Structures are given as structure tokens and as C-alpha cells.
Length: 327
Image (cartoon, rainbow, N blue to C red; front, top):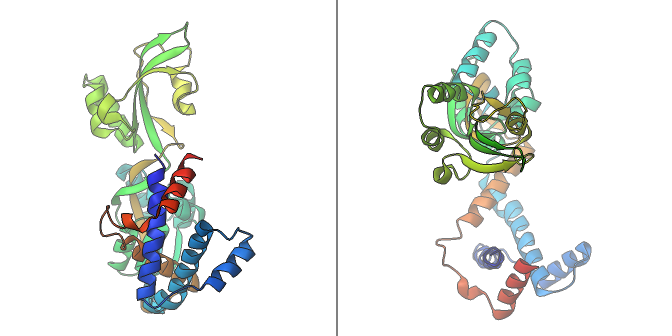
């Protein structure tokens, strides 16, 4: 089943070669052989194709897209943190209003790795770089649309991925002989949501229906959160500890159980705008990021449909793709 990916890679390389030539960029055989020698790779068609494409992309980045990326742009200097729920963001904002330091709070609470590690500091960034750094346009949209010195209200981001979630687990049966448990589970995006759903379960609502509506576990649309018979060690540690605790009996419903080993989507940003500039020189590393993005977008746009360039493959390359997939 991996063969299509290898095939597409060969097709992509051929598209890049053809379209780069239209822009006036080619790579000679001497350049390829030199790079193969430096990399200590055998002079074979597959390696030549790969090296040629890498050299082409480098030329495009440095000699073509460099001219497309401006030397200066509008930028903001801002602070940001990502919180799991609106309730948590409201509390954090109140702490900031009371005088607590944004950086310290971001280092303590932010679920975004960059802002937690850098204590919220984003530095001077153009809008596109900010979106690349954070994997989200939400903080930049606020910062570029606000005046310096402002602190945002909680800003919802439906698409952001964070390594934090909360389990709700219902143990419907235990088998001491096989040392398994019958378990239904939901993985939810925040403690606040988990608490509300637990209240609805206690009021008699159906676990499967709520799981299908709110849980972020794969397969929930089909199984309604019913995991069937689960062996000890099969669940993430916090969930496993609850299910196989001797005090957990059949019929038990857990409270929210925090888990940082499974990702969930959705969160709330707080953004503090420190400074703004209409036209500021772009940092060299940020320009490199913009050039890399431009190259990536260009490559992605080479594919007008899923059924293109099948005829670029000769029998030898197709056979190689299949062999690579099964090795």
C-alpha cells in the first residue's frame, strides 16, 4: 500500500524538473555527480533524480523566490499564550489585569510549545511568519488588527492542536480471570468540557451519543467510544490507572483525567500587543522561513489533479517504486 506514495514522489520530482526549466532553472550532470560524490551515494538513476531535485529547489529558493520575498514588511512585537478553555483564559486574563507577569504566566500555563518555552515572547514578526511559528493565524489576526498596548479577550482557535486532553471513562465490566475491562471512553479538549459532559452523563444522557458529538478519539463515529475489552497497559497511563485500580468497580464513571500524551484540537489564545511597525526589515531567519514556504507552496500547486503525470513513469522507475514500498 506504500507504492502509491513512492510513485507520487517520482511524479513530483518530474513535475519540479519540468516546471523549474520553464522558469529558467536547470541542474547539469556535473553538478549532480559532484553532489553524489559529496554525499557518498552511488551514481544510480534514483539517487541522481533525488539530488537533481534538491539542487533545483535550492536554486529556486535562493535565486527565484528570494526576489519574491520582501526585505521589509509590517510587523508586530507581541506576547501570546494558549489556554485549554475559555474559562481558564478568563481566569488567566484576570491574573494579568491584577498585575501578574505575562511571561511567567505563559511559561506556567501555555499549551503551545513555542510560547511556553519562550515565556510568551514572539519577537518582531511579519504576519505570515507568526502564523508559521504558531501553526495558527489567530494570534496574528488579532495583533495586526489591534493597537500597541492592548491585551486581547480570549480568542477561540478551533483548529489549533495541543498535547493535552481529558478522558472520561466508563468501566462497564471487569474480568478478573482475563485481567481485562470493558471500557467506554471519551477524549475531550478541556477540563471544563469534560466536567459539563460528566454532569450530563450523571443526569442520564447516553454515553455513545455524547461521545459521537464531543470526543476526539479516532473511530468514535463508528463505536460511540466503546473500546470493548481492554488489557492493562493498553490505555495511556492516567486512564489505565483509573480503569485497573482495585477500587474501580464495574459501572464506575471517572472524573476528568488529564492526559498529555494524546493531542486534541481547540483552545483559546491571549495576546498582548507590545509594539507595531508599518515597515520593518525582516530578520534573515524569518526571510528564510518565508522562502521555504514559498517553495513548498509552489511545489504543492504543481498538482492540478490527482490523476496527473502517470505517464512520467517508465517501467524501471515504477518497478523501483514498488520495490521501495515493500522493502
